Amino acid sequence: MKNFGIYNSQSVNLFIGCLLSIYADHIENDYSKHLKNLKEKDIALFDIVIEFWKSWEKFDIENINANNSDFELIGNFIYNIRAWASNKKIR
Image (cartoon, rainbow, N blue to C red):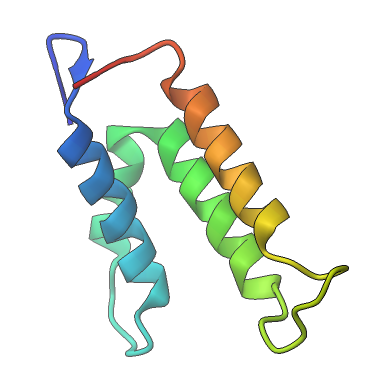
């Protein structure tokens, strides 16, 4: 994901996609080694994605209205990703 202090944007995208795919898998699989590996690669990014996932699980998708919108949930995720990326070189 990072070479010589520079993050590869495609690797960051793959990291996020893999982590979300693991948590979204509806079939019982043992992903413990995969999760450990991802966590070791970048714990801060791992935690941001997991926080988003936990918020998404709690979100009531059947009751979306002016008071219950996913905009805040997604906005928080974007804010956290931007904060994570702010002091990094990403190409």
